[in-house]
Length: 60
Figure 1 (cartoon, rainbow, N blue to C red):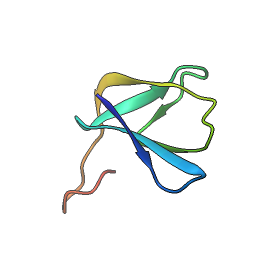
Figure 2: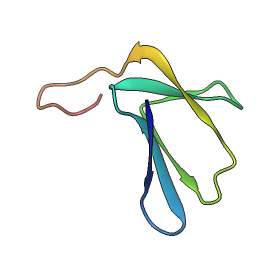
Figure 3: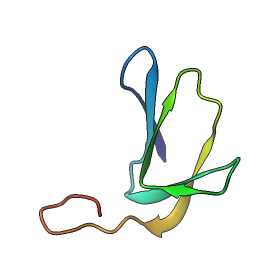
């Protein structure tokens, strides 16, 4: 599922709670996470491609 997290009054972050890439519907570009200006003009969908994790538990 895609999580939408308000970082401030002007910024919103989108990411997958399952560790998958998200795809911006309008462009087809994949992201591990995306930060947009509010109001956000983009929409996202979750892919089935996992985001690689490097040692230490961080995303690649």
